[in-house]
Amino acid sequence: MEKKARIQFWMEFAVDAISLLIAYTLTVIFLNATTQKVDGMTVRQWLISYALMALSFLSSYAFFHSQIDIHTRNRFSELISTIKNGALTYLFFIVLAVFTRSPIMEKRVFLLFSFFIFTALALIGRYYLKRWLTHSYNGKNKKIASYVGVLTTRDRAEEFVSFLKEDWGFNVSGVALLDNFVDDGRFIYDPELDYASDSVNSKTKISTKKKIKFPHIVADNIPVIATDIRFIDWIRSAPLDEVFINLPYERSTDVSQIVEELESMGVTVHLNVPTLDNMLNKSNFNNISCKIYAGYPVATFAAAVHNSGELIVKRIFDFIGALIGIILSAPVIAIVAIPLLIESPGPLFFKQERVGKNGRIFKIYKLRSMYKDAEKRKKELMSHNKMDGLMFKMDNDPRITKVGRIIRKLSIDELPQFINVLKGDMSLVGTRPPTVKEFEKYESRHKRRLSMRPGITGMWQVSGRSNINDFEEVVKLDCEYIDNWSIWLDLRILLRTVKVVLTHEGAE
Image 1 (spheres, rainbow, N blue to C red):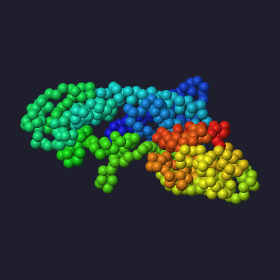
Image 2: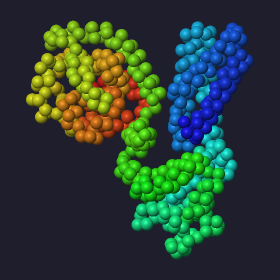
Image 3: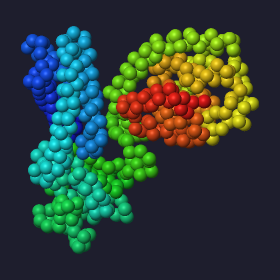
Image 4: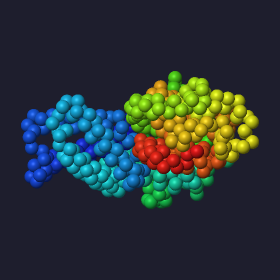
């Protein structure tokens, strides 16, 4: 964990831990002084409850803490992050309290009251922490920030340095403008050629010990320390923790000498990569990370990056939800099976190959709502397809049985998909899994909608699916879901799904 992320983690941890301790203790004092709701527990039982709460808090922070930089989180994101942290902490606490048979479970008013106090205190604490980090500490007072130097050119300096200044983790000490090393748009470092300034002839040798004052011209009085070879002397003598190099070089050999010398000083070096610069300019996404694999530096691009802890929670919810769904679905399936089989003899369940996450093939389970020869008759009906694109949908499909039309209207035909969720092929919430033939006609950009597990329900299903006849609109909704995914979005979609099923909204 880098220095800035480590500092932010422990500061947020301290703020939330103190808020939780104060909230828990204030609730005990307040309720004891007013409604007497927390009487009847011994000191030992209270100490155990404090220990359980501490364990719950640590578990929540260890697995589900948000890694988003505090200065990029807006107020709504901060609110969601705080509520999520509190909800998970108290959820873990309730599970532990039930497991240990703690009498605190009888104090429901206490739990609710302390949760709201904790959320309020944590929000206030985080607000002042963010203000302290991003505003109160600037310039030389940024004691906890890394001292940073920048090597760049005039055309890049203003924007780049301004961005670094907005980050509480960096205290930009100075800039070296190395335009004199740029020839025909390419950076060429030659330590034998020393330039004093733009006003000095390019062939003039200068003493590196001679001091020349340069105006404060970059990003709100960040001083320009050098425009020549003396930038090395500055870095060697100045208290710098990190150096950012943002130069227009084409080959690694152009800057390798500088990087090697800075590394030898023990300074952390951040180097722009021209190839990645060009790729990011053309890309619609900015999610990129770099790691060393088998000694090779590798850049990783991703359209969307999701928190691994939240993905684990999603899978746990899927597993539990699937088990509950199978138990509740069994009697419903047993009841509708009789008229289904009477009207159209044959298998009760319909199995079909579908395409799941990133192109994985799996067999989806549904209650058979069509006649047995439905797939063969599909070719004859393609002219009636009302979808624009790579999906099939038609009004009054003659392949659907009378009972099948009813169970589709009530979404009962989807119930066997809880088995797919239990197996891990699908999720409760996701994107619609296409058929193999649909998938074979996909363009490259369409595949992105399969970058998460397909779901029983999703953004398309709760957005009036009968009114959406353009496949590109389906792709847009699915990608919107993937880009903005969170546990809370899943919960909202599940709640909207209940409403859609009960009102038959968008069903056919």
